[in-house]
Length: 212
Length: 73
Image 1 (cartoon, rainbow over the protein chains, first blue to last red):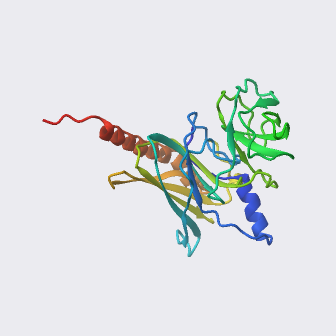
Image 2 (image 1 turned 30 degrees about the vertical axis):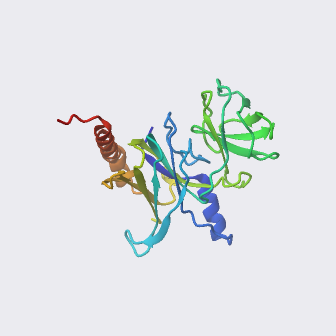
Image 3 (image 1 turned 45 degrees about the vertical axis):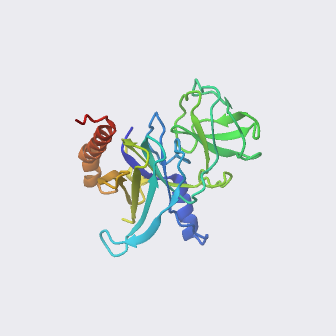
């Protein structure tokens, strides 16, 4: 695990489309994650590795000065922990509603496996291709939509194919050019050393995005 | 951690602050950073990440200490 923060490829896709005349959505939904394997955040990510049970919060967004006037976009959000848990990832997304997630009902034992079994397909697109995140890997679902056996293309969006344990979290997300997954736009992703919180503890996240 | 400057459109930082249930605030400072500046990037890779992890480990020890049963006469 590396301590890192990234702009996702989807964020770059969104920013360029906004500059090109699209209607922007303010990225100010703050969330956190608890994936036990604690992968390193990467620009290829389309979703959190394993989002915690707590709801995302809509942060307070401002424009502040870091080096030159108004060069930094800042979002501050605080989430209170409802249980004892270890937080090791933070996200900045476009919506406070989380994208759909499920789990693997059987391990993915090879990097070439193209059929995967999931606990539930409820809430995922019933047709058409869409992306999912399992640990640090992005996969494209190309078949079996609406069922619990999906045909997938491995190592998508610049990620590397890997093996995954039974029970691993699967979360839907959007790669550049796609909006197939509802609430599936991940803007920024950070991973860091696990931070232990007790019930009632809160974590205030301050995102600072400087246009250098 | 590998960093490719062409992949970095701008600098970004994530600052974290723990607010314990009793109201105690524990600023952890910068928990994660990405920057185009090669000197800052090298500093973060070599030193900053270790400092950030050290602050988090200290906070975790504090949490464990708070959770441990106390002996009171």
